[in-house]
Amino acid sequence: MLIRSLIALTVRRLANDPRVKAKARELAETHARPVVDDKIATVRQVARDAAPGTHPARVAGRALKRLLDG
Image (tube, rainbow, N blue to C red; front, side, top):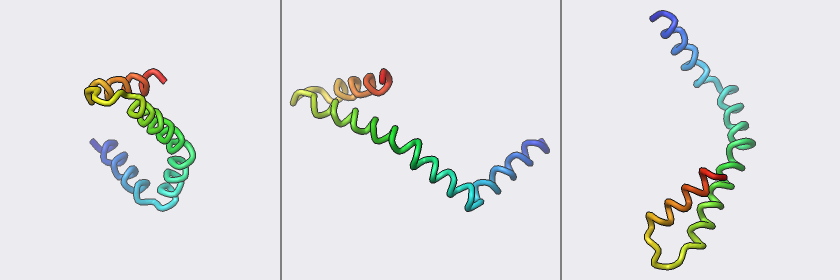
């Protein structure tokens, strides 16, 4: 129980540290943003390629499959 409390306290302090926040923001911008933008483009392309009148669930299934395969 004591170790759990110490870990929780440490995590709270790190979460409030401006240096840690800045580093997390930097990493998110350099590493996560390009991946997310690529995935968004993939989903948009699937939506554009869908024929009008196609059931939305079918389009969502195709988009999910492309996201998971790629």
